Amino acid sequence: MSRHRALRTKVRRGIAKWPVAIIGLVALIVLGWLGWTWVGGVADRRAAVEAGDCNEGEAPLRVSAAPSVAEAVKQVAEAWSRQRPVVYDHCIRVEVLSIDSETVLAGLTQGWDEAKLGERPHAWVTDSTLWANRLSAQDASLLGAVPESIAASPVLLALHQEPAQALQAGDGFRWTDLPDLVGAPDGWGRFGKPEWGRFEVAMPDPATNAATAMAVQSALAGASPEGRGPVTSGMLALDPVKTTLGKLTAAKPRESPAGTWEALNLLADTTGVNEAGFSAVPVFEVDLYRHNTGKDGGTAPLHPLYGVAGGGPTPVADFPFVALAGDWVGEAQVRAAQAFRQFLKEDEQQRTLALAGLRVDSTTDRPRESPGVRWAAITDQLAPADANTTQQISAAWATADDGQVVHVLVDTSRSVEEPGGDGRSRVEWLREALSGQVNRSVSGSLGLWEFSRELDGDKPYRQLVPTGPVATQRQALLDGVAALAPRSGTQLYTSVLALYEHAVADHQAGKRNRVVVLTDGANDGGLTFDELKSRLASAKQPGRDVAVSIIAIGPDPERAPLTELARSTGGTLSVVEDGRGIDAALAQLLST
Image (cartoon, rainbow, N blue to C red):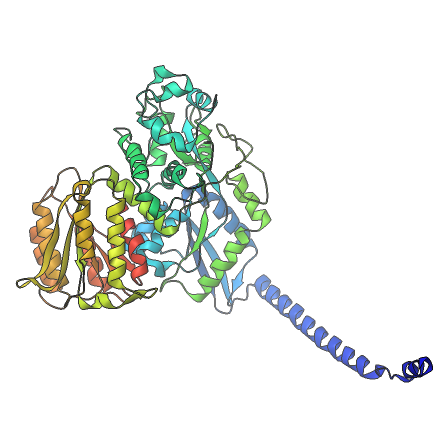
């Protein structure tokens, strides 16, 4: 048997070598041809670029950049332009304009003023995803791609040198301490300086100042399960969280500055701890660096302000690159924006951003001169709230100071029965958004109306809950929201006029008086649009301003008349694709 097995082994045939050789030769020829084609293509493209041979001509890539990062983005754009980029046979010309994020958001959503701002941008580099969230809440169709961070900057407290040193001594300062610190009559006593009195912090409106918004998130994060965030929608309805928010808004300085830059300038022009009306202000590290070195367009202050990093989870701005979408954005701009974003993230360009005072992962390089800024390491980063919750925090802040009177008008026409996303109808999403807002509201006044057709005799509207303090009629409002149900038509214009006239007559001085309309259909009876405009103009009264803001639900709303209606009263138009966007849009609207 052993001999037999050996024989079988001897006579086993091998594979002939010549077929293998032929297959290998063919593979080499194919790979060589592909490689030659690729190299040739690269060479041709490079030759075209070097020769300036752009068959489709020049195409601009307009980028709006927040002042914090605009100069650095311009430097990167110049470096990219020197490479003479070509996209779809277009030579790309990058134009970078420094424009405040608040201005960009308002322009994109409510009408771009080309006379003041130039042509609309194809991309936007802002300081925080908070702005991209706000854009999405008002009109998600304007986002061309998921925003992508190109740099970062932590939030600090900016103070004079002596109070900054006191704050850093002993146990130091934590963001979660802020509500109790600002609420105490002797807040500085905790840091061994009782003679300085209150620990006052300027908190510019978080709806327009991202540093404040992120500081507020950090102050509320202590209520999250792990104490480091994220803040959630459910947390905002909890009494302890509402109490914390109430403490922060109640302790705002009497003459609170409108913005972070104004607050920095007021502090820099004084020497006493509370001489400016406050002791400190939240600020992005990069903005403090720019302020102290005069790179913000001013002159460097004689005595720089000092940045103090709070203990615990640190709020960090992510400086996203936001590709935009719209009928003014061509395919060449879409591809050019992608290419420029990738160029911004390359190591050499990241170093340019780092030397401008921003944080990046690829280098620890810092500006050579940086008075007042220590560039402390970030050891624990705040987990940020999601897109919806960021809007809800700003709305809760806006309602916490009892400064809003809101009359809500809800469409209950038959069309709200239609699917609104995730297997739920539009009216179900409406109820959830409105009840959530009622539960999260700290104070302020709110009333509820509905409109359809013949709801009150021949009137297409009726009042469900009279406008009054949320705190005293929360359950009535929740019951009214729960009773919203589909009925018949959509007599929008007649109903808007009736509620506007009611709001003007019921105007409360010193507060933001507004009508908020949620609708998913076109006007189908009653007043015409021209009649509405004429009647609204007649109903206006000096000193009794009432803004009408509209949330249009559905893929194809009548934008032109709704935009004109909102603008004529100082309001805004938000457009959501389906019911899932109502919550964020409502919170965004109420926060501004």
